[in-house]
Length: 164
Image 1: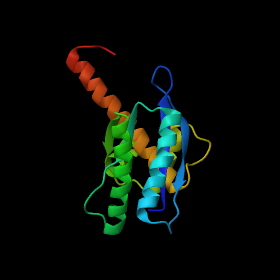
Image 2: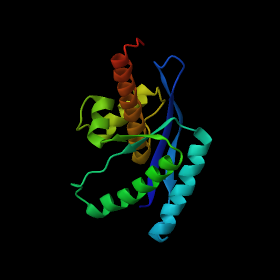
Image 3: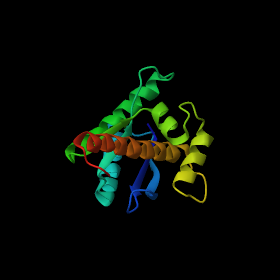
């Protein structure tokens, strides 16, 4: 684990438009022991969470069928750090499977990186495609998480008989 993307997005007043607050990549020293990299990841994420105070956290779900098991294990470690931070803050966590994020963002669960980047740029009205791919992936998960959360809230309101 050498890097991870992150993204903070918010709904503008009225909820019809989204805006990008911040997105970037946390880069970790690949020569450092894993436990030090995880601690550094936690420190960086804690600063970001403190700065932005998000209402919820979207996190990419992991699958056991990864072609690269070592990558899946390292992602699992990083995901554990993210979930522990969310737990400490009693934050709602939205687990977002990668294929579902692609489907929500582009309408196609097998969309390619460039198609996802174009959809994100259009949705957030960015002047250029989000780069690098770590940032684009984080934005896709954040956007999908926001939409998934909104859908659950909508269903809950409908079940309670409340009109939006």
